[in-house]
Image 1: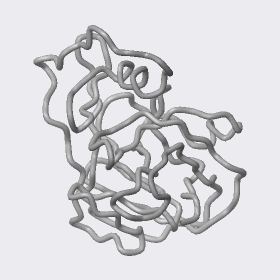
Image 2 (image 1 turned 90 degrees about the vertical axis):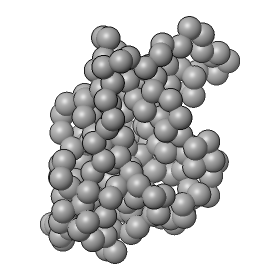
Image 3 (image 1 turned 90 degrees about the horizontal axis):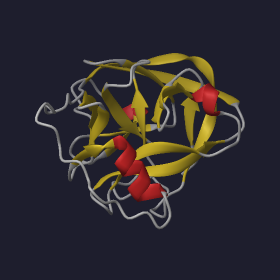
Image 4 (image 1 turned 135 degrees about the vertical axis):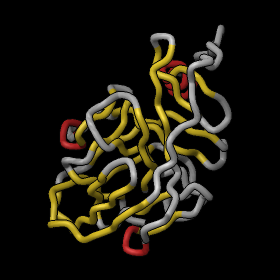
Length: 197
């Protein structure tokens, strides 16, 4: 598969929070959050953007936010299917990720456990790091919002960047591929995002 084309003004959730893609287009690697089918959980992974180019775009609205995506991208559904944007329909329930502020930390539900985001990054990306004293899920953490598609429509051609995810899984649009990343609908650090390829 070709690299995903992320629209410059779409937000990616990174270790720095919700960031416009164009702010990451400096050639250096950054951290994304990706559902890894082999691990059965969300993982922190290194990523980078390639040179800017213009491509067709599609806007996806959910009951939680609006995302403008490259037309060659795909959505990951809650049941694990990978659906190209041109086949997306209202009513599709998406694989969503909730980030919440609790006890002074940002917590994430990885699909296996609820842990602070910084501990996920340390355990997945810091070579030789063995997490100790993991914080348990706070009692205030609530079940996350699962987003449902409400509208899919063509958008204007847009500037964007190819996305490369550091992942050994197949680089295709299969349910076994871990080449997905978390998009965010706004500039907040907490709430719900969706996984796209």
